[in-house]
Amino acid sequence: MNPTMRQLEALVLVYRLGSITKAAAELRVTQSAISLLIRQIEENFQLKLFDRTTRALHPTAACKEAVPAAERILSGARGLSQHMRDLVELRGGRIAVAVSAGVASALLPRILARYRSRYPEVKIDLFDVAPDELLSFVTAGHAEFGIGSFEDDGRSEARIETLMQSPLSAIGVKDGRFEKRRRLTWEDIAASDLIAMRRGTRIRTQIDEALASTGQELKPALEVSLITTALALTAEGAGISILPAHMLPSAQFPTLAAVPLSQPTVNRHVSLLSRADFALSPAAERFFEIAKHAMSTR
View (tube, rainbow, N blue to C red):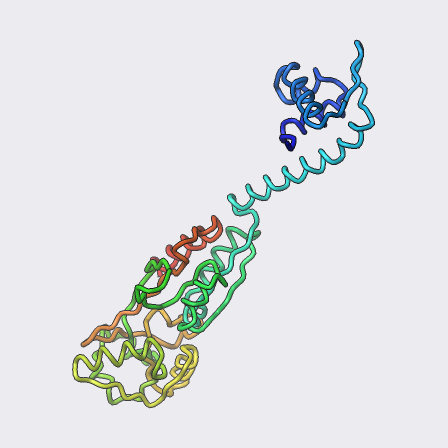
């Protein structure tokens, strides 16, 4: 039977202090309790650890060899305990976060800045992945959780919680009139040069299905694969982008404004995705809380 941590503590203290009385005071137990702990080790291994006289304790050769090993074990246990406390109190640890490209550009900078200012000792592994790859990336265990826009098909082993939603909007250059519009219809912008996501992307599929249900059809002048490409083209006057309002990072594109589209209104969600059978670590839980607050006050 392996010695307990309490037995090892008693052994080391008796050896270092040279007294059962002092060791008992250090551990705040009785002298008989210390004597019992030492005796249990001796009986377990059939080794005499101390020669006892009326005046003192004398460590045996076996004791002198055992104490350094006991100290290493105790030191390792204390180190582990401290590391576990650091994880709980977010004074250390590491999290892996996956985000879709749009979230990485428009939403992540503010979330990341808040998190790192509060928990600078937590290491973050950040993965910006294509929206269609986010679900499989997280469920495969490459990241502890993901943030992005995706739909739950009911077949994946994932836990999804919506953080925010916003309508698809017409994003154009501020010209004194455009940004003052409270709402536009799809018909209002049909004659404009439109910049849309390429066919096959989730957002484009959602647009095409919504418009088809009302007898309309999107006919963009340009199709792109990346949200940042659409915004950059719009900023240079190439046309009006069709994107969720929350995907417009105002700090990066201060000349652009988003006007919600209606008839029909098409909402896009940003959600947190994690594996249903795994609990988030304390560091990941706090990241999620900060992300949720940041998006709710956007």
